[in-house]
Amino acid sequence: LQAQNTMTINADQPRNKISRHIYGQFSEHLGTGVYGGLWVGKDSDIPNTDGFRNDVVEALKELEIPNLRWPGGCFADEYHWRDGIGPQEDRPTRINTHWGMVEEKNEVGTHEFMRLTELLDTEPYISANVGSGTVQEMASWVEYMTYNGTSTLANLRRENGQEKAWEVKFWGIGNESWGCGGNMQADYYADLYRRYATFAKDYSGNELYKIASGFSDDNYDWTETVVKNAGRMMDAISLHYYTIPTGNWGQKGPSMNFEEEMYFSGLRQGLKMDEYVSRHSAIMDQYDPEKRIALAVDEWGIWTDPLPGSNPGFLQQQNSIRDALIASTTLDILNKHSDRVRIANIAQTVNVLQAMILTEGPEMLKTPTYHVFDFYTVHHDAMLLPLHIETEDYSHGGESIPSISATASKDKTGAVHLTVTNLHATEDKEVSLNIRGMDVETAGEGRILTADAVDAVNTFDNPDRVSPGPFDNYTLEGNQLILRLPSKSVIVIRIE
Ligand code: AHR
Image 1 (tube, rainbow, N blue to C red):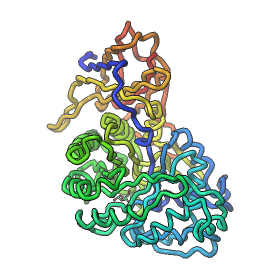
Image 2 (image 1 turned 180 degrees about the horizontal axis):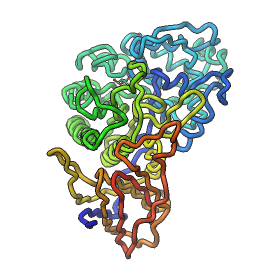
Image 3 (image 1 turned 45 degrees about the vertical axis):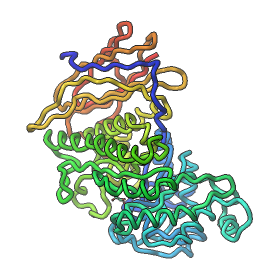
């Protein structure tokens, strides 16, 4: 064990606030993400509140989810909100053409979703239909939800059981408008965005925070055109980046039963987020040097091959310690860029892609990624303490990535929280942290997440194989904290 990994923080020089909205979630009408995973209906034998599973809601509440994006994704651009209001028996059945061609009975509509946000104590992030809808349809949805006066639409909301207008801040105008959201070109979308944004009004004191559809990965031209032409009318532009372990969308790689090669390449692909965020931000800097417009990384996470035997349109995958470390290292990147990245949403909350929770009938388990989100609640709205990290490389198959990734932040009480990941598959690492700018008295409340294998997952037979334990393998001498991290682990610790 060598202390070749060093980190330094200046606790008296915080940079900017890490918006809690970076820790947002995303729930699309896709597979069993909503139906079965969150919603079972009021008449279900599975204990529920107004149709939403109690077990899942209770587990998610612990994550202090700041915002929940809904109803898509690709589904959003074929969703017509009027299908999902009024008596359940009168709601039409549509076909979810993006995700498995299954019937969408519209049991979960606006009122149900808003009830879920109440149960989770989270803010709604509505993704509105631009691809197959109209400006009028979107404008009416805003009025229906947020107008507190007397209008036909506001009265319709009341008839449907909601007297008071809801507060809705986050409003996405189209999703992946360059792809499933309409296959548009950047110039065209920028004009369309301006038109839609014009008619998305602020009613009754509600202030919309308008999010334009950005591109994914490294398409910088889209960002440049849309920000240049429509930037003044937006609060944020999105960026989507999915980690494909093999780097090949045709054969993404398995979510379980893999070796170090797939572990390493998954982590390596995940770290590309840093380059994408940096370069999209640099383009935005040209038009918005004050950083008024946020970069909304409103879809991210690992995307593997579907589980054998599952409906490929349902995007069901397992979730391993590797995925937990993709979450921790991605969150470190988003935190580092939190002067520009002020909202983000992992895809997706339950049963889909990199989920927090998996369900099977009445059973439920917490994934390794869940525990990372739990650890990282300490950074919500805390002040970022920029970290200087010197780390050894972790090399495999001729490629190298850093062994150590971390975030440090200072909360309102003055306590510093540190989350540190050892990415190495087989080597334990010693990390020495030099804390400047505060008199350190104690370190404690340490927790660790690690596993016995690179592909370790939680199953319904063994739901706690990857679960947190206490972390006390550290020494504090004056202002130097020495952490000893086992291979493939993430820890959280509090310093006061
Ligand atoms: O999260 C799954 C899909 O990925 C979303 O619907 C879409 O926006 C993206 O391509």
